[in-house]
Length: 113
Length: 114
Picture (tube, each protein chain N blue to C red):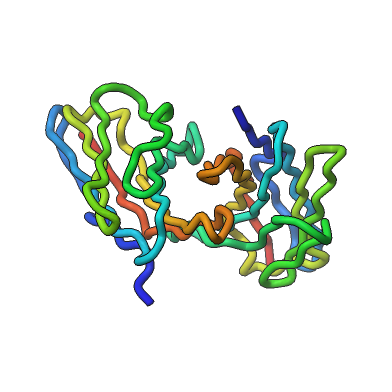
């Protein structure tokens, strides 16, 4: 069975600080990797995704993530966070013919102005 | 284009009552997922369907929970009888297998069982 681990449950940063959120997954086969964002009171929205090719993927709002296959990791980064990035971030793994998607437990990011 | 539509958005009920949550996926999507989100357990996959057929219901907590997808444009998640520990936000999401797993979420149904 696949699983996803997010190491940080709650992160507090000042505006302009750099962000890196860790994500590791366990699954023996080919996977698709995702980061979703949930703003307060809203539903989850796709931030970025990796299917194949360049392991460094760029998403919306200046976010990027790097797939390191040897480490089973897909960490999310942003060079300079803004107050509007305050949200909960979920790493997710899709696998199998029916693309079962499993989510990590989420990381709450609080950006202080 | 309409996104995933869930109803009701909020439901408050008393323990023991039946609760039915509804979902209309995006037209053309052939996979549908039900997730439950709580503070304690995060986002849990309850069940998912492909082409209206349940593929994996191993996440359904117990027999009180059931889900159906009678056609490509409608799914229900039913809890009978409901208990206070079922209080959560229930999300429905749909995807097209051609899009390799990207999920589109509804706004969620916030359930409170008193």
